[in-house]
Length: 485
Image (cartoon, rainbow, N blue to C red; front, side):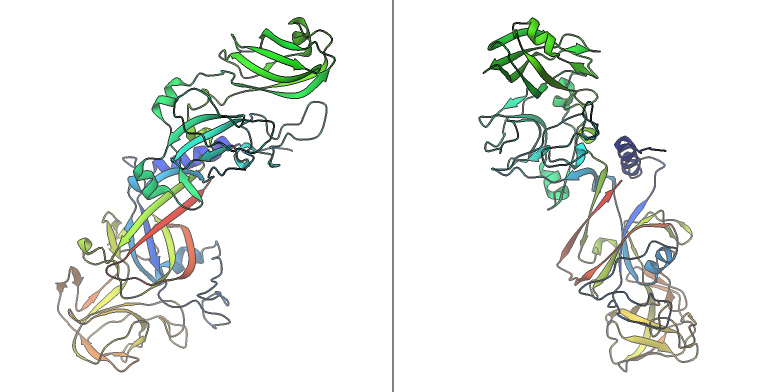
């Protein structure tokens, strides 16, 4: 049975997701970074997927139950995403001179009358939101294309920002929608996507069901030359009129003289043109273009296909105002989006959370090296060094479910515990303290500190494997996630 889920459902989902960041009882979202160890190629003989790709070309993660657990194994830190870090977004389409843009139509994908051929855009797209019908200009203004001069190239960049339809010298007609603010440009403008928002002035000026464009589908033959006026636009709206120009006995232009209101469909027939003075005309057919609900500019998010949500988060050094939770001593290769994680058994609320475990060590000989294996003789525990804070004698580490990173040769994972010596593969040794203390805002019980984010809590909504990102204390990483619904 033929059926569809409409674009309105996609926009509804994007709205619900965006609202989750700002509602009083909404969700709490965290951006996570992890994976300090390289991606591995080939069979490992452990719980790891046989082939993870490589640091140069990591493989796409699978969407399965493992995806809800694996990211916690080697997670380094998380940062809370604020409502101000989130916006609706659309694909970025820059205005470029010499480009033929698609026009807005309400009926892409419908079958042309009497045929089984779907109506498509000039670029061959069968849906409006796949068509290139809007542009971003160098002034960071966004315009919707209503007329493209019979599918010819645009050569004049639009600039006006009034609610009135803008006609440019190249025969194009544009509808100004909104301007990207300085904040939107800084936070929500990428190579491929841009923020979408509704200009209140443009929205207030929109008229529901007002007809702005009528296109010539068939020019007809035999008509009396001249401009024939006062032709009513028929349909379920009122007040719409147009004039039709016939030259060389064919229809060459149609001009809307009164937009009217309330149209959800409209027609102008060959007979009406004949009655208005185009005597002898036969075969002419016009397409009345219906505006979006509320009129052009009423709701830019819905009109331009805002079923994308863009999240923008920056990692600023160690985030020192939050106890240095975000390490700069190691690189990362994985980005995650986590919904409603727990911290210490309760809902996480802190701006940042350290995701590694830690040991407070005394009597250290030598130095622990990042990514090296550490072991504990009496327990058989195995881990990987993330960072060695020699000033405070804190060893930060992870334990994964992989051989030589968290499990022994038998596949068992054992927690570090007790007071016996922890040995670094590079030769460093030290003894975990037995005291309960707080050092550099890290709380230790008997010399050990758990991760500040509870493993396997919440839901992993997004995973990205990527080439390694090397961090530094004076460096900021800006991470943009684009979620499509």
